[in-house]
Length: 489
Ligand code: NAD
Image 1 (cartoon, rainbow, N blue to C red):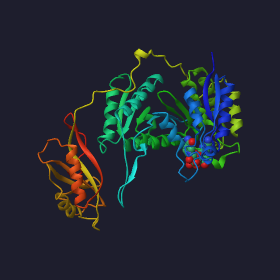
Image 2 (cartoon, rainbow, N blue to C red):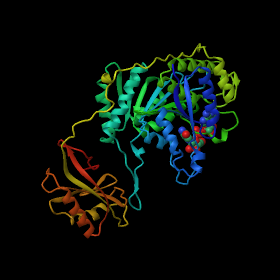
Image 3 (cartoon, rainbow, N blue to C red):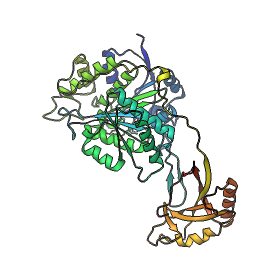
Image 4 (cartoon, rainbow, N blue to C red):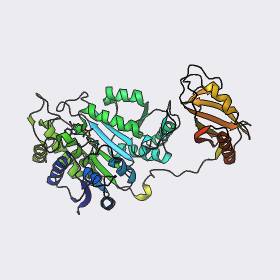
């Protein structure tokens, strides 16, 4: 069997030590891999490359399609971009998978029975990074959720559950508030869940779901969620299982995938043979399964479990009375190598199968291409920056000023401030800032409007000396409103 080429980056801080330890175990376990090493991180940033990765390194990633990456240090300030976000988004690594497992009674944990896999959407949500300062008082971040983005991540979660013999998937969303963005994620979850009757599907509003996950993680199996919630809750899940230092993660794309530890480069621990290599090592185990070497993954993972069970622990998980031997990075890796061929006695041994090869024709598409719906422009929200010095009650002052730009078939139906209706009939108790949304719809209720009417409306705002800062169009899709109402509208 020929070797599989992989790209490896040793990273910064503790990165080189934990990578060496990981590769030592893989090599001794018989991994059939050819390593192509690239430089990323601090050295590359400081050489004047603000992305932290050299152009030729992308060629290696495109060639091998598999990336084992140690953590890097992002220099403070200076406009350096997050390499992780760049790599994930450039290579379309849409799914982030983080298994969070407790190793009771061998590693101290709040939750002796915990085996949760967080599947986090990795490309969109507020992480599109589209932000604006729009007025003296207000900053805005755009939350983008797309149907193909939801379909990709939700289908991945269900396929993951099937392949990994998982029984239940829970979706965490906040669609009681974000009825459209999180509402779409939930809707797609329900649609795709219906295609997998053998997997139990469940959903929670993210706040109470997170509380339940932190309290009784044994009631969860796989949890799928949008990017921001997933970012936060995967760290919580890893920490309550035992330590963020123990969790690995996979970032999966359609063509290329990246495997890493979830922790950073811990610069204060660097160069002292102290760091725990387990996070990166467990990331590499997911990589070995991914590249079709489940035999090596199983051998190495069971040896690791045995070392943990034998109480051979690095400083971060060492506990008097529980641990037997405090070791450094190298000695821990050697302890795993010495146990290759052994299985844990108390902890559950792992078994990995070769992923089933599904014929192209039988593969479910990871996203659908749908007929566009009928889209009608029925109104426009014009946002303005306006301030008369009053935090309370100013909506009733502004309303009549805005009424003056009515005309040409458009009329003001509402002014809101931070989403709450403040005109007409605004409450004097509502706190208002200098950022206002003025909603215009057709005079003739329910009719469509034109782009030309919107442009003329903006001209009238301009003539009235009103500082418009952005517009949002109000569309109906197949007759259904594609916009939210103001609070109190
Ligand atoms: P960190 O995860 O590097 O370290 C936090 C603390 O956790 C450390 O001080 C250490 O006590 C402990 N720790 C982490 N990993 C450990 C390990 N393997 N073994 C033992 N102890 C470990 O987080 P930070 O200090 O906030 O960030 C340091 C640098 O890492 C920053 O430059 C940050 O940008 C970067 N970072 C990189 C990645 C990545 O490359 N994937 C992720 C997060 C942070």
